[in-house]
Amino acid sequence: MKLFDLIKIFFGNNPEYLKLKSHDKGKHRFLINRFFAIRYPLVAHKLNLNGTDPVHVVDCWHLVATQSNRTPGWMYTKVRKEKEKDTKKFTPMPETILYYLRKNKLAMSDYKDCLKFNEAELLDELKKIEEAISGKAN
Image 1 (cartoon, rainbow, N blue to C red):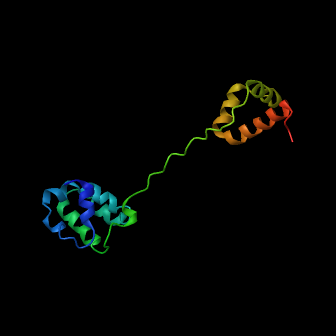
Image 2: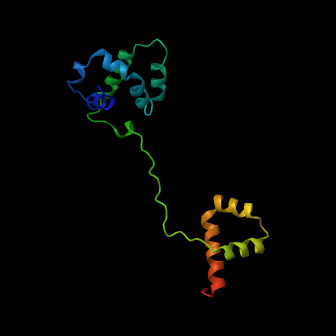
Image 3: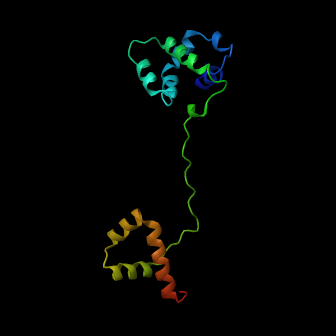
C-alpha cells in the first residue's frame, strides 16, 4: 500500500484501517510520524526514539487521527508557487547604463550588485533617466 492511500483511510473510524497488515503500517512509520510532527512535535519526537515498534507508533497516531473525520489541512504542507516572470520588464539601453555609472561614479560590478539586490528601484531610476534623455519626461 502506498503512503497516500494509507493517509486516505487513516483518519476517522474507517474499517479499512483494521484490515491493514503490520508490514504496511510499519513501512510508512517515518513519514506518518513526520506528518504528525507538524501538529504534535513533542509527541512525534518521543515516538521517534530508537527501539520503538513502528506498528505501534502508527497505531498510536491512528488513535489521534480518529478524532477527526477527514484529513486535516495541517497534514499537507503547502508548496510555494514560483512567481511568474514579468515579460514586460524594462531593459535599459547601454547608453543609459553608462550615463548612470558616470553620474554616480560607479563601476560595472557595483551596478551588477545593485541590480542583484535592489533591481526594482534601479530599473525605475534607469527608466526615468532614459525618458529624460529621450525627452519623454513629464
